[in-house]
Image (cartoon, rainbow, N blue to C red; front, side, top):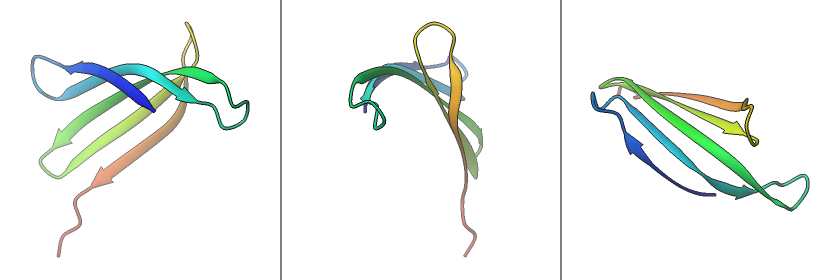
Length: 67
């Protein structure tokens, strides 16, 4: 996957657009990723696939492990 984007003015959201190879078809497909920084300990990454009307394909929630 390759994508490029920008961070929001408040520094809490990174939105990127790009392409990846669809494993099911072997063809190039468009993708948009949105990383939302919740706080110092957590962020969420969402991936949207498809042209025009996006469908959420993956949502990953990351939280720092306390040791």
